[in-house]
Length: 231
Image (cartoon, rainbow, N blue to C red; front, side, top):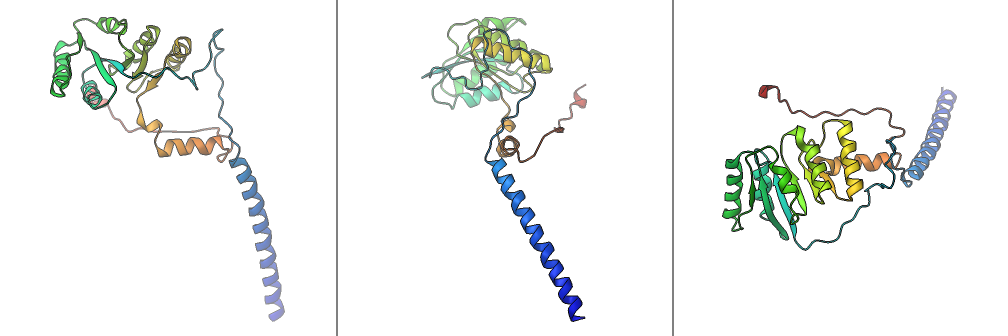
């Protein structure tokens, strides 16, 4: 009985040592992989001649950022109100097809003790006049989804940086329109989605780029935002 127990003990010890050695090797390999960043590169359409990516794009410092807002319905007024608290910002122009919405945002400026902005309203192309001004640096877009991409592209083509509420595009083709416009004009274009940059997303991206997740062949995501009641 004692001999049998000793045999089992020795066998268990050998297995434990083997597992520890394997785990140690695996951990060391994982640690080595973790120290090597491997940026995730996906296939992309052929870039137009003379265009370069904007990953490291920088722009000259602006002491005062002059802003124009397009779309003052749901989220627009809230954005205007937040900008009134920022130093180094001047709200130059406001635009919405409905004049009463423009007036509502003008009242936000008045309440904050700021000067009235130039107003654009009354027709579906009024926003283009705002984009064509030469005293604006940034266009903030908070309109309906179908106009996000064309407005952002038009803004960049007229020398403005573009910031757009989600979704900034509704198709892959529109995404590439934005990329091409940003590369061509060397203007920044950002989707105003904070959840792209919080702890969870940045940590997951960092893990993937360090190879901790291996080869990623499939991913799924979900967003609970039921809009069926609006139909």
